[in-house]
Length: 379
Image (cartoon, rainbow, N blue to C red; front, side, top):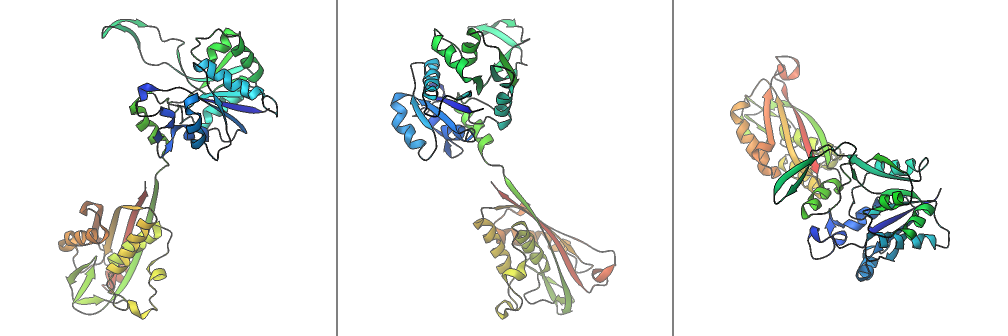
């Protein structure tokens, strides 16, 4: 069956504040009305009802979108009827079903929409709602004057769905003053099925609601986790460079660059989180220009690449594996050095050490290994 949508956007919404009507104000980078329209993009016929003063502005907002703009009436019921009449008058013929939705509900989940449409297989009308669970009071002059039984009470939401011909007939004969289209349908004798609503399906009414909607509409945070592992053997020398700090030792670390095993592991962890390979891809050891290079060059490149892709580094954790030299006395300096290179707070960088209990090449003091993890976040 053919299903059409009427989005009611002719109100002013003065309680929401702002210089323009709430449906044209931006939330999470887009006008509310565009977010709402996007929730119904899968339907082939969408009518948006706007007030006469907003027609020109609305045509700019919806430019490039396949919608029909219709001028609204003096109240919500009149605006809905205008939208229904426009659908009845289309060249392709009236739809079988219609969903009527408030523009100020831009966060409606797909599951709610699907539930309404499915319920229309067995009912002439259906609407989402949430059962009232809070205690209900009456009040006057700032004081509680009584309570009301909440049994059987629901908070109504949209979209409210109908078989098209009956709801159009109901609107044509209704005297006006209905709270919503469910009331119009019931006054015409139509049964209305209740389907599950959603707390996400909030209606923007006050200024605070914009922030609530933004949290729901902003894309999910992209969190990446990368691991790095590096090994360097000892060679004759009198110090090693670990996480940017020169540490006296009875040997040096052998490598094409300065062999900073800790910094290399952290660098590879960042590259890994970005799916950008390892240091060797970006700084090939076969290239003589990197002979003896300061590993800060590699780490800064990885950090800059992450930033260019829109990621912020949340934290890094590096474990140095060796019997000697002792890392503990130098760990604070290493964390400070690494945080400075990466532009992070010191508490975002962890450098620690462990031994391999005299096992393996590190236990035999043939070299040092490092394991690192980096967390990247794209807001």
